[in-house]
Image (cartoon, rainbow, N blue to C red; front, side, top):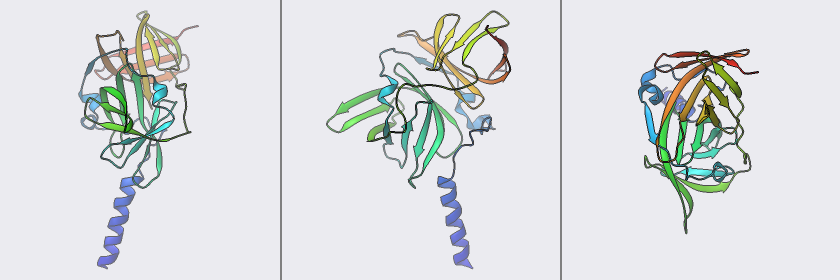
Length: 235
């Protein structure tokens, strides 16, 4: 009897460790805002335009140092993760690269978390790596042919929208966003929209998070502080 109980416990542990692929049809699996850093923190970060192009991330496996996880940056704005068991789990993160700023939103094994960092990429006798300013280092590993440049987003926001107050939003498939002709970056995770900007070299940029809902040619945005806006698709 004791042996049977131990087998069940080990099985459940392994299942929890590896079988955690996110349901891409879910609105968002974070239900408690205390578990989501995007809800509990306001991000302001200094933006530098002198970063690397996203094409340098695509087409490779990136091994997270001192861990059992390997990241694969995809050209649809998501990150797949190879777990310790060797299985690949898709859409574990969404990401945005703007200059020297890297934003990731998701999780390897638990609740979604937001990380907003600057990073540096280096190449030496040990190979190519990039390090985020929170200390996490990723080492370029084997080539991966599952994704290549250019980056192309597919979502319900693409196109030009005009708000009831006259504000104009223009979402492009390359993560660019124009708000009244000012340059921003954006990405989407399920029914959440994250924007960062305005993007001016050497100045600070704010990250804002919205819930969004599109109904035909109307778009509704609700910011994390409760402010709501309505937009109409431009002709």
